[in-house]
Image: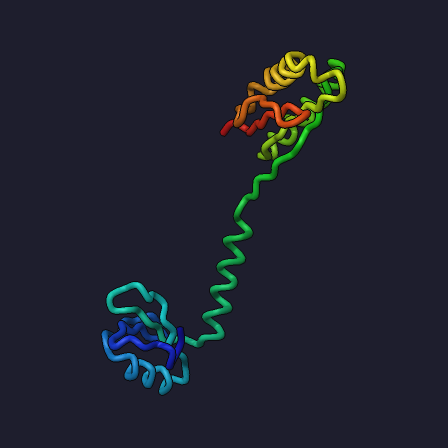
Amino acid sequence: MINEQIRDKEVRVIGPDGEQIGVMSSKEAYFKAKDAGLDLVKISPNAKPPVCKIVDYGKYRYEQARRAKEAKKKQKTIETKEIRLSPNIDTNDLNTKVNQARKFLQKGNKIKVSLRFRGREMAHKDVGREILNSFYEQLEDISNVDKPAKMEGRSMVMFLSATK
């Protein structure tokens, strides 16, 4: 809220240099801001009394946008990478997939390991569970199991994340 939009009876006013002017009516504070050629901006509406600052509103919004952009830049987004296996995977192929998963985990991503069953492979779910267990055992030093192996339709899924 700025200028005439501030409807509170009393507000605590902070001057353009950051010094505290004191508690006064919102109209009086608005006139002080107008005399200075600046805007009265409500900074902390939940305080008792609300805190308003005399600033240039355009500059104030620019500073807020810049701070938000800096905070967003410092955030790390965690992606979920998927690795697909099949029940009749060979050991060398499994090792290749494990190495790929290791790279993902070192970058800080989570991994969804899915093992898809086709046709008569559905009769041998125990083989799929063994493959997922051996996959995890090879990555045990750098990962944790978020969700253990579980059937979802025709595929068995397990989620891994990097250890801290």
